[in-house]
Structure formats: C-alpha cells, structure tokens
Image (cartoon, rainbow, N blue to C red; front, side, top):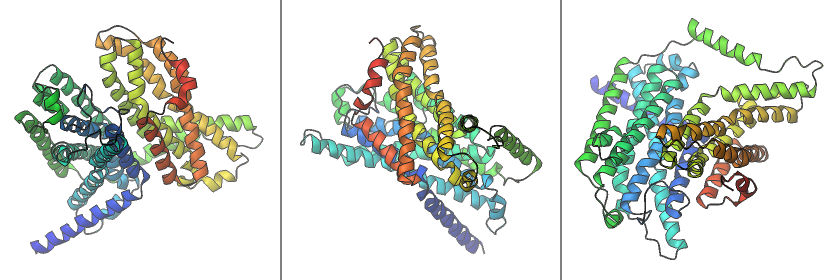
Length: 500
C-alpha cells in the first residue's frame, strides 16, 4: 500500500514539474530572463563593454578567478528573475482562485506544495543555464574576432563555479522566495526577502574587502567568500589558478544550504491551503475596484478629446504606479546602482556615471516591459472590444495612457537624482552630486528613457506579437550595450555630461 502511494506521489510530482515547464515555456518573462542572462554573460566575455567583475586589473575576463566572480554576481543580479518566476508559480493558484479546486482532487496538499516548488526550481535552473552558455559563447566570439589573440574558455573554469556557486545560489534564493510567497500569499514579502539578500550580499562584500571573516558567511551568493579565499592571490594566480575549494568557501555554501533546507522544512510544516473568497478578500477586491474606478474614463457623452486624453493619462499613471513588479524593479535598480556607486561617491561626475551605467539594464527592462503591457493590456484583459465601442479614438486612448505610464516610469531617474544627492553623505564623502545628477538626468537620462519607451511601443504595434516584440527589443538593447553603441544617444549625452 505504501509502495502504491509513493508511486502515486512520484507520478504527481513529475506531472506538476512537467506542467510548470510547459507553462513557463509559453511565458515571455521566462524567455526574457534567459535572454537577459545570456546576453549579459556573452557581452562580458566577448568585449569589455559589460563589466561583471570589479578590480580586474590585468586579469583576463575569461580567467578562472574572474569567471567564478562573474557567475556568482550574475546570480545575485538575477534575483529579479528568480523573484518574478517564484511569485508567478507560488501565487498563481491563489490569484486565479483555483487552489481549492486542485486540492479537491486526491492530490495531497504536501505533494502539491513540493511539486510547485520543484517545478519552480526546474524552470529557474533552465533559465540560469544561460550563464555558462553565454560565457562560453562570448569567449568563442572573442577568440574568433581577435584571430586567436583571446584565449578560449576552459570547461573546468565554468563547471566548478556552476556546481559550487550558481546551482546552490539558485536553490537557496528559490527556496526563500517560494517560502515567502507561500506563507504570506503576496508579493510584498518576496520583495523584502530580495532586499534582505541584496543587503547581506553588499554587507558581506564590504566586510570581506576589510578582511573580516564574517563577511564570507554573510554573503549568500559566495562573492565575499571567494574574495577572502583569494585575497593573497596576485595577477598571475588569478589568471591561471582554478577556483579554490577552501574552508571559507565551503563553509559559506554549507551554511546557506542548511538555512534553505530548514526554511523549506518549516514551510512544509506551517503552510496550509488558503480559503479564497472570504469576507476580507472580498473587501480588499472591492477596495481595489473602487480605487481604479475613480481614475477610469468618466461618462463620455459630450466629453471633449482633451477630457478623454486627461482621463486616460490619469488611468495610465495610477495603473503603473500601483504595479508591484515595478516597485521591485525600482528597488533592485537603486540598490544595484548605489552599491556600485559607493566607491565613486567622492566625485560627482564619477558617481553619476556609475549610477547611470549600473541602472541602465533596469531602465531597458522597465521601459520595454511596460511599453508591451501598455499596448497589450486591453487585449489580455478582454476589454479591447468594449473600449472600441466607446466614442474615443484608439490614438487618443494610446497617447493618453502612454503619457500617464511615462510619467509614472520617471520615478527611476528621479530616484537616481535622490540617491546621487544622499549617497555621498551616507558614504561620508560629503560631495553632493545634485546639480550634476539633475543635468545628467534631464539632459540624457530622461530623453533616452522616453526614447526607449516610444520605440518599444512602436515595435509592439508594428510586430503585433507580444512575445516576439519583447524578445526582439531586449535583444537589441542588450546587444547595443554589449557593443558599446551609445552614439545613438549622442545629441542628448553631450548636453547631459557633467562638467561639459
């Protein structure tokens, strides 16, 4: 009997994992995550345009030491991809009110939860397979384009950090995000867990640079432990020696894997299926509807085109500013930019350039994703035909919403100005970069950002296929960064340069 039940559970788990893989393979966000990681890592080893490792000096980008640091760092950057995928999986049935229906089957809730987790992990492992693939592809491109002057990437340089750094990192972060979503039933807690990981990562690195062993344990991604383990290596050692398997790195891996195991076991013990449709949930849903209703189009009998345009602008503004996904991207963008701008905080020009450079990929993601959602929102929600029946032209509707969304997305450059103002004081350098940052943002950042948004909207309208348009745009933007093709923004960039 027990053997039969085990067989049933095993079959159910395999079915849940296969279902998740099939479902995510049709989701453009999963392909988008894979493509971003692939292009980032390809650009890193193919050229010097993308720097994933600081203080390289004379160490080649394809050296084992540099590859290990790059692979660990990319998994830290990829938290936004992990968070979105984990949230999509763990919160899908709650949001769709299908959890009760699934659990009404003979499938036990424990099997259901474990299957959901394994499905999430399988999807993310496929996405993060882009890291070694991209590094190898970039090294091959560098070797071809330099006629053999660049060394090819050794397989061992990728396999060891993949097993020791990337796979454990994906397992730890996926467990934490999945547990946060399952136990809380919302995305906000997942966001705070992500902030905690970023804080531990940056704090661990700072302690490791200062020579404190605590930093090696605090960093969940392994960069700090690797830094301490190779602190006495010179350029020759960093160029030729394989990633070390010392006690400090193994202790870091063991600690975070044990914490992930305990968290997973606790989630399995404490989680229970949620009853949806109760009074509190109905009340929250009613509140959300009433908030949106206040910003929807007013009765259009006799309304002018200007009134309709302003109504759509308000709708676009309130829609995008209430998006939790945007809040997550903004927070991660600011943390990433501030962490990389810390060392340059004493010089306003260097600080602003660091903030702009390290928030650039997030700006591309935000502009491209929300341009697509703006174009496809009505079709995805099934309201497109209803809106066509209203006495408002499609051009006014799109223009108004685009203006509202653009105003909402200006939160990123505005927050970068605030960071440029406050970071020097927090760092103790006192050299505020407000004027320099304002000139850079107004003269370069905002026009370039709005250009990204407008081009993305036009491409989505012309291509008329959501997934294809997203993949084409992200590929084009990231490849442009990798190739250093910034001359397109020269008319704005020159005016925005600090000190020019």
